[in-house]
Length: 219
Image 1 (cartoon, helix red, strand yellow):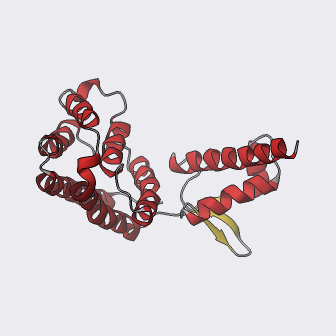
Image 2 (tube, helix red, strand yellow; image 1 turned 90 degrees about the horizontal axis):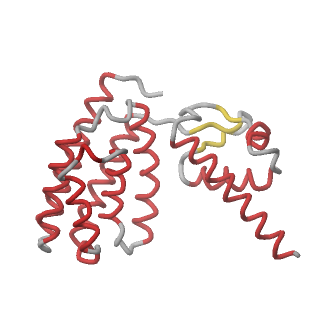
């Protein structure tokens, strides 16, 4: 009986965490928006505060929630410095991961993306496909500390896309061409060339993001 109760509590904690994280990443809870713990519990069917507080603590560790003394809970904002830091991290980690551990990526997964990138009009959710591609390139990185730091910025990248109109920085044809420039040497086992192409791809994305920041107002 106790084991069943423990599993139920763990399940509620995970449900609360996934529910809140999805809302934050989709910008349904906007950056700098204040949240009410009691209302959040009610939204989830009047769950108790214990699993909710556990979920909020995890989100705070991931940088998605800020707990302000005497003020309450606030969805973490996104600043220009955050965006610059995000790309600085990606430029440091992604090419390194591909150059050093790319040989461990399943060959079939690389071929799958080659086929996809040759026919971009057939991709239903291009932003997800782009995320999946970069996740594949990072998937064999064994360093848990680097991986943890990198994972923190993936949510920031998702929110930034939505805030800027989601597709404003993505040109399908150009992005597919850049991805193919990474994939083609990767399939040949030329990881240095693949990593150099990935760095160039990220630099282009960074420059586009900086251009977007200049003409929109971040929340």
